[in-house]
Image 1 (tube, rainbow, N blue to C red):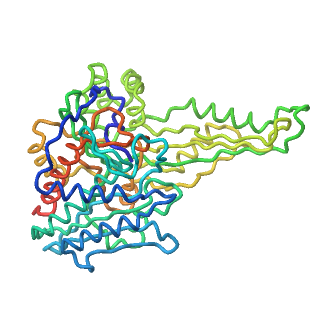
Image 2 (image 1 turned 45 degrees about the horizontal axis):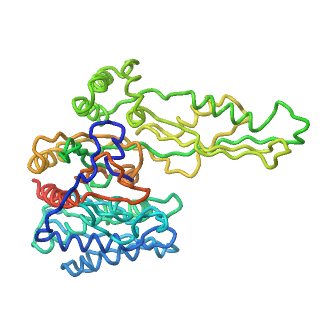
Length: 472
């Protein structure tokens, strides 16, 4: 999952200036130790192909153990048959057993990175001109390192939280073919990670062209990833004797009808709060449209303005798009089979069955079958932005970034929060990492993260989690 600069890339809130970060001061007390944790984590290859999340989990467990955590509070979870896809759970016990825990969640695995394509070695942490460069520098080893460092600091200073603080570093978030550690923990080791709520990746802050914070986001809810396979078969035959009953034509016509459809606009508490908060931060026409759509979701004029922005359009409705097509078996033969993958991002609370039924209705062809592909099929509603979560966040953010508004938003992508939300652990995306609208390289080439943003987020999350853990 990416950072906020990708989520709001089309918002035109911040301009892009080269060298935004500029010269950085020398690390202050504590930052050097944190940097070493971050460096070690980044430089352990955790790709699915050749890497090992288990090695990363073991390395972080060693750091926690050296800080004073007993083995009884460190749990390395490695599923049978998946020796390189390990997960780590660490626990700092609270003083009040009647108060449920807070869970700090981050994933250890990263997207593949080919050294030949990168300007720098993707698995060597490089600090250059105020930026950290490496695969996972942002997604998601920045937050994972912050969580480890936070847990170490609490232990070393003798902090005794009222609420138990748990940390889960998981594997498998970035790869559909991998064993997902968050799902494994919530379904088979629920006792280890059970919590009143969790903090996860998925939201950060936005900088303007001068590097000044514009907004800080908290993710509450996310759309659900769901693939559907459309297929039609046919006896085929010789291409010199064509007939109207053609598998490719059946499939193509169904896809055209599906592509022409726009799912209805939907709003929930999160998206209403997002558009309300963003309205004064964007251009006048977009701001007016945001206010109008919140007041009346059926306002077609407002929707027409917002739909020009792919992110805003996706936040307002379920979306489905054809992503893969495969058909035919020879250039001189009528096709015997034609298949397509339609990828849907489903609005929270809408069932995949309802979307499947709509696709079948749109295809309007009994010759085209529609089946859900490999999927999570989980459509939890967004967690509530309760005072328990928002009051400490607003207070701590006001100290760190005075006057910067907090913008709730619903992700159009997906994180491991979908598993926890579905099993009753409200999960919020909150990193405190500020980015501009330039290319962060997340999931792509030359991934980078502003040095100052990482250190500021470390300070912010350390204090915020302490507030959550100490609240009466």
